[in-house]
Image (cartoon, rainbow, N blue to C red; front, side, top):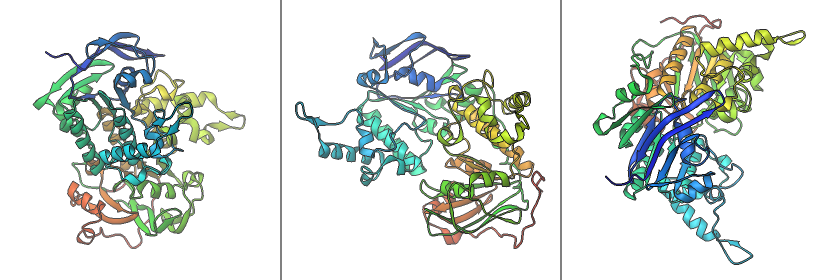
Length: 526
């Protein structure tokens, strides 16, 4: 048997209060795609960061082409041919795409006075963007103006520029559209043909089935099993990941959609910096309104405008039949509207602060008295939400940055659910979350809908849209391209509307001329 391109043996890593890895081993051959799957907190990202030189292992060995290696930092790992595409984007937002592609590795010529080879970098950068399916005109654009999906593709292009022998992809499709994901599969196939080893980490098990040659499953920081070939099936991966079967993964899929009164209504709504197209839609009590669309369709921007982050231009927002004017997010919060943002790292959490601090932050008005914050009540309240949402943390004092992505996402939910919102806007609600945590979040969404909360779910995960939505509104270039009932829902119908086709062939769902208002928390009729 040939020597593996990469082999890790007996890797152990402990953080304060958390044993992240306990004797994990794996190997990957040249030209092989090895998927590493597991629930949040299973140790996947920690293992990849050890391989890429970000963390030193407490115990264990790493071999590259049969030779032991020790990396003091990521630069040494990259020099050895190992490149990591991080789960959380790691770009210099104030620089151009081209600057990011060659940052720290600029092409220069000359002696003492080294000059940049601008033309050579532009030519090489253009080839890299074409390889990942990005327009060449993005080279000179500042990264901060790119969509999340485009930023993810820039990360992939930068990793490809290193000509790595081992390429680690940690949730590479979390911000990609269907078309961009298909392009990524083509890139992975070409890398295999070139003999590059790919370590692929994803919570989207359909992707794993499609592109992996072999799967290693981690559970609680240990090896839980391995699958290869025809054995790489969704149910088998789930069973190894969580140690049980998930029979009610999508709790809303097998019962009729709920039909309650209108809670939130947008009427000819426009916002500054957005398209000229006016948007009108309704979200009803007790329903999950899904919103689909390609990256750049304006879904997130629309939600931010409704939440008061972006200023309005025209139109009206109605909540329970009453007109609203939201000039600031605090106005939306006071009215009973909450937003779970797409990017929890930058917009949802203070990562350097404790778990309890993040839970308390938007609820200080409810935890305060005449003499300030009632600390005893606050601690009791924090423990209650940690237990209710099953947040895996040693205590409320644990630094939020040390938790897994799924547990961080639960904190974002907890801090808003404590305010008992009337409308909950969920932008990519399970991004970077494992199957076990997804099932818990879906059950929570179903519970909230049963209590009469209106849920507006923006998602790029097609399985999630089809499995959890009572209705789906599809956006295309800033406008509502169409609306699909549960009976009309299919991947083909959503993609037709998202790409600008079939608008006239799908009839709109009838709307009440004057829908009655309801009080928050009133159960919707089934």
